[in-house]
Image (cartoon, rainbow, N blue to C red; front, side):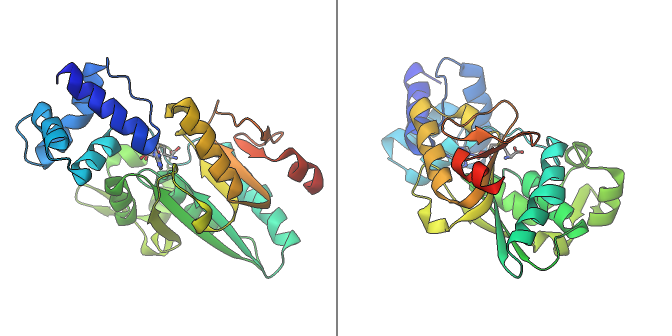
Length: 269
Ligand SMILES: C[S@@+](CC[C@H](N)C(=O)[O-])C[C@H]1O[C@@H](n2cnc3c(N)ncnc32)[C@H](O)[C@@H]1O
């Protein structure tokens, strides 16, 4: 890749997804973009970037941006967060809203491990007397496709899944495992770029947005946070990853990752 190639990818990633990509990290860029170049039939990453530039190819540009977004994930990452959702937050919401609907959103679901952790935990212990709707979205179409298929490798299931849950919720394939249709069908999917207007999605009682904010440029982070905050129903909670913070929202005591509006937290207390 030439320095111009790297600058172009960094600029596209920032403009389209708010992602912070350091154009000096040649190895990282090459590494992330090489599979895209291969899949799209280019002989090199440089040829891929040249096509994005010279043909002004929107689809290819998106494939490159998606490849630059972070991928780190696992089942039940930060397990205490899932325990809090299922054993404290949902029963509490169910008590306040008998007969109502509780809406949960995994706002950058990656390959599905996060939202399926939620769905598995819910299928094991769902609060009585309410309907729970589970939504999942991501910027990256390939990750969404993978998530919807619910197929994971041995390596992937080893990351965070207990043997009990593997046996209960998955069937083995020749080269991996597939999640039961029952759990897969609990989730509704959509491609969403968090940089866009999120109001069309409605309001949620719980939004998980973990592992994204730290990879965004400062302006983008503020924009995404205010968009997410506007999707929170009154008393709704935003759940961030370990070490992530949200200016304007207060962390909730004893619930790792949970943030809420200070006024809502006071009202709920
Ligand atoms: C590190 S993964 C985290 C997955 C999951 N939330 C977890 O914590 O296990 C980050 C995800 O954020 C998505 N992402 C990055 N920028 C985004 C944006 N602007 N809009 C929506 N999703 C984005 C990526 O595609 C990726 O799947």
